Amino acid sequence: MKKLPIQFYKRTDVLLIAKELIGKIIVTNFNGMITSGRIVETEAYIGLTDRASHSFGGRRTTRNEHMYADAGIAYVYICYGMHHLFNVVTNAADIPDAVLIRAVEPITGIDIMLTRTGKPELDNTLTKGPGNAARALGISKGHSGINLVKDEIYIAGDGFEIAETAIGISRRIGVEGSGDAALLPYRFYIKGNVFVSSYPNK
Image (cartoon, rainbow, N blue to C red; front, top):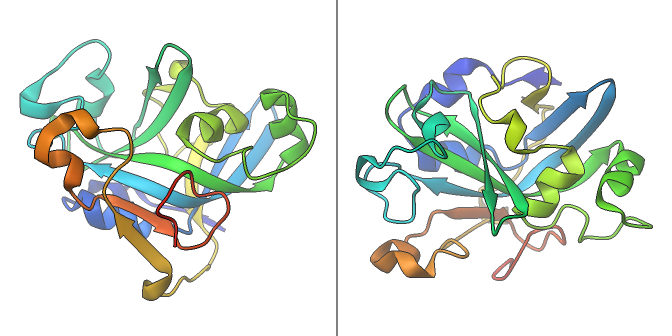
């Protein structure tokens, strides 16, 4: 397994990055507790021109400041006052493109994930949806700004290959208030995977 290099994140096409993150492995290592999962669902956000993005039109606040960071930085924000959502910053500094990791399939440290989430046993709800995925992986708002080529949180490839026809594409979830942007096909997922957070997943 090999960490994705910084050049992976520095590319200008956030849609391509979001698609190519499908099948990669996200790893967290906090105080020696290692957990990992295969990414099965992502969403792309084109910062400045995307009405569904926190940084649409150049909006810049304390909350979204890490979206404007260099590529390969984590952007974590809190949704509904309780869910910590993990995003990967792409492109270049001051161009706030990002990819939301919506769901993963657990691989390593499932017992740790169960403890973190308070679940008695593994089922697809453990890491289904961005809030559940981040919680199981131990990611919180305090990790926003972490460099993803270091060791606390990183994404790696393990040679896993997925056919083009096995990747679904749809509009994003939960952005209905963003006008025409709500219809953009910026969501990618592994068809039929039980950990994918919502429909359509076929």
